[in-house]
Length: 266
Image (spheres, rainbow, N blue to C red):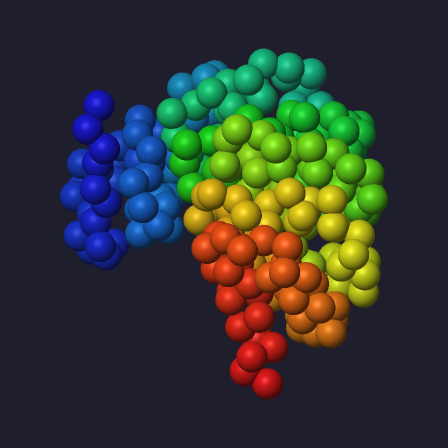
């Protein structure tokens, strides 16, 4: 299958492509398409196709109640409300259906059925989210950590024990999840206060990745340390100085440069 190139702007998306995206027949090819999908229409088509149209109006009502309607907020509401409907109707099939769907945005909804499920322990939650952390689509990978971040933050020490084991995984996406999901400040998410105050807690995640061969992972590690430098600049400066002595690799040097970018501006 030839990888499709996405349009550079919303107005350039072919009508047939947008229609296919809204029917859930294809994945989005880039961020422009990801932002252009009408999730309400996609949901309607999904539920109609799978004989669950009774779920539609309660979810649409919740979307309308949102003060700020963005791709991410709508995505979260749909996933969260689907979880409630699954529980109310003992609909054990729906998670499997969403998880294996062609549409990347539908798979994103599935992550919230895991992340918002309060009956799952942090161990169960992370075990179930791992396939989404390894998803081939960038959007699913990002939403996967966002969907479980609050759970991670509420049980940070146990989460770090689990995620530190992910740092040796052969899949760079899974290794990257371990740092991206625990960034002290992160992007589009609440801060993790314990890691802002005490970044040493995450050493078991950071240390194995100091010379990771994947730039995808290197960027995440560098961003993690840059986050920490905004609250604990002395710690990060000393930490990077130690890495310079211990690891004379181009990968470590790249991470350190990224980690110190805020400190070096001061």
